[in-house]
Length: 333
Image (cartoon, rainbow, N blue to C red; front, side, top):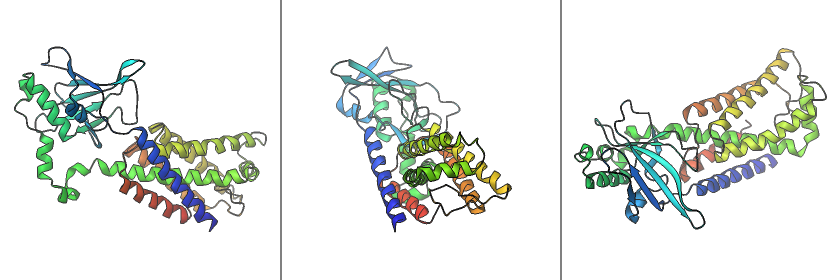
């Protein structure tokens, strides 16, 4: 019963942290936008509220639809979004490079970042339908003929792919890797959180478990144990919030790889020693322990390759992922 209670607390904290982290990147319009590019004479300043809404943070770029870099993007337009600070004046917050529809391809955008960096920077995204419309208006008004005749290919694709048939359409292909990566983040973040809480309750037992592996000099074992007790909550927080981006995945793969090597070496030596995995004194290392670590390391590696950035999980998808995390933890991962 105590085990389930801790799992419930962990999942609750995970969802709470996700909610806080999402609010930190809340969607909203900038205070001003500057557009520059071919066919435009100088800078085009956008302050109209309707258009600013279309240029909103994470609204112009559809972060749920990451796309592959186009082989021939054509001419690009630099979009710089500004916020006004009462003390510092105008601040260039971030920058996008917009590429209009070309050769049947919808408009795409490269998220360059600028003053503030997020896990969404450095990737290509589809452009939202409203963002596409507003950019077409701006370019049309200034006589940029290269795009005057183009209707939004994205709108045409969505007309071909109505809401009730989304499950069969290609524009979900970019969401599935993000959803899977998001679910794995919750699972692995929950695993590290649970492991830390259990070990922190009996730190001396964990130090003895590290010493029992006999892979480090006896005097170094307490330092290594302390380092692991520090690393696990940091990784749990990074995975659950997205802090560190791909770096968090790299650290996760490395740490799980070290655990895997330590268990494999001692199994090969034929030793039966306490696992120390979740602070339990009764669990000894076994091939079940080894298999569990292999699965966790593979899950981290797959998530790292699929979608290293923190995905914009919907509430429904976040809830489903949290339920999966709870199920796996209760099942004794």
